Image 1: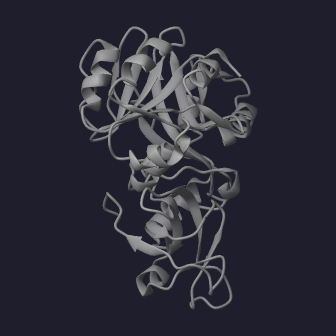
Image 2: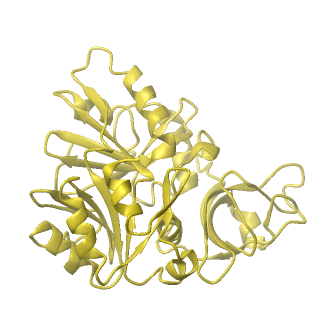
Image 3: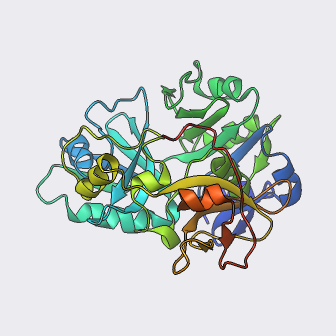
Length: 340
């Protein structure tokens, strides 16, 4: 436990496997999803890159173009295996001399270790930075007003834009959704201010918000399974097709220009429990699975909402089922952004 988790526990936070799962009323908190909520995001880790070569180094390792990265805006990106499949996807931000990568804590250590192996003689230092910034998610009506009060200046206006205060900074991820990064000394006061009018929730509710926003997160069960386009990373602005080489780049380019992406990310609902890595099946193809659950979260209306990577024809036929061809059916619905 840390001073921050002790602070949350004193205010009713319930931790499960080190994650702030809820604040004592899981059903009530889930019912509040889509309204005014503030979430602890400690289940997302941070990696900091510093040094003269930090920007160039990271640019050469990931799917997006970082040459113009500044404190004004964040970008999505992914880190791939040589086979072109995602080992992680994440948010990349700049704060002062640091380039920060925000990704699920469950994959943070392995990704940090792997990236560190390729620094060689580059002037780059890498460190775990989760203890340096408390991460909060703010979602719902009037969230911009509250974020502005935290920063002491206007909240970021455009999607993926950033705004910085003395002890905090924020990135706008949706019309009413923000990620906040706060210095630990200031975090308790910020939490107390935000939790007046915004309901405190845990990771379960935030996961549901991200699932319904169509933003996937690679987890241990799905590492090295999806090329970026399967997870709609290019639709989210997380892939540059104009930059130079990076690990897996040839596979990504071939998939894009030869039209070989047969599986895409879809939003669906299922009436039974689902977990990342669960296989999906349909009548066609008869001899293999047609997809996999990427992310899943309990739904306020019962059952689970999921992001599923699946074959387009199987989804169109409406016969995709969980774990077997006799399993629970998935009911698909549109994503909140276009996919071409």
